[in-house]
Image (cartoon, rainbow, N blue to C red; front, side):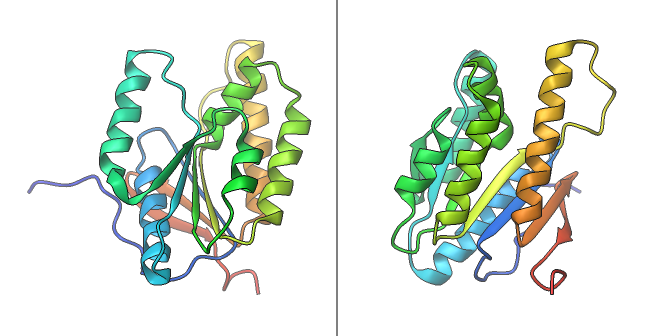
Length: 193
């Protein structure tokens, strides 16, 4: 039996103010997030906004970006924001259009490589997410489930990513974890009441 590794569609409906979709590499988290945002956009009769944080630093990443772009098609309004994510969120929040940020982990990598002030950048992003009137879905890798990295930079990255995911999850009304293409709801608007 042929299996499509696409995440099963989520129920069509409106999104809460903030959703976090976590998972490992190639777990199906981007597809799941796209399905959520597209369902909201369809229900509202608007085009969603896709804020992409990836930079094509090598051939593999170029291919991954092209795959994501082809899958999304022309329905999405796309903005590239590899570093200035808070500004992109603040400037794109309008007209009831839901926003998808893919992905926080790549953004974190970019600000680390740019030697930006991590705490200031994360605070600016959290403020922008709090201020936007539009629903936002953030995609992030769960990097803390594997072995402890063997070097200081990788450990610092893992620690920053874990703390960022915790901060977003604490503010989010919905958190989904994707494993093998299957969503597991960790937190939902119903569970926070």
